[in-house]
Length: 105
Image (cartoon, rainbow, N blue to C red; front, side, top):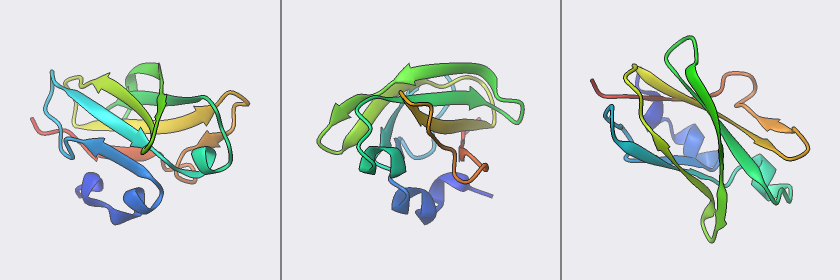
């Protein structure tokens, strides 16, 4: 199942570019979702790889006209998983399912 073609993610304000990344490249994550719309001034992208969320790291996102953005290096895995949190530790994790995007191998 290709998660990155899920129009629901775009409706929730989450986009990655390129839409289907390759290992060892970077992706731009754009977030204009619930936390941004609720007035958050600082958002972190909580990122992990594969089913076990390997190589977890929080990336500070920069506010731009399109929303908050971060550039993330892609690890060797089958998916990149993302959830978002603000400085008050409110989460947008897609109702506990997180946001997952396939990585081309």
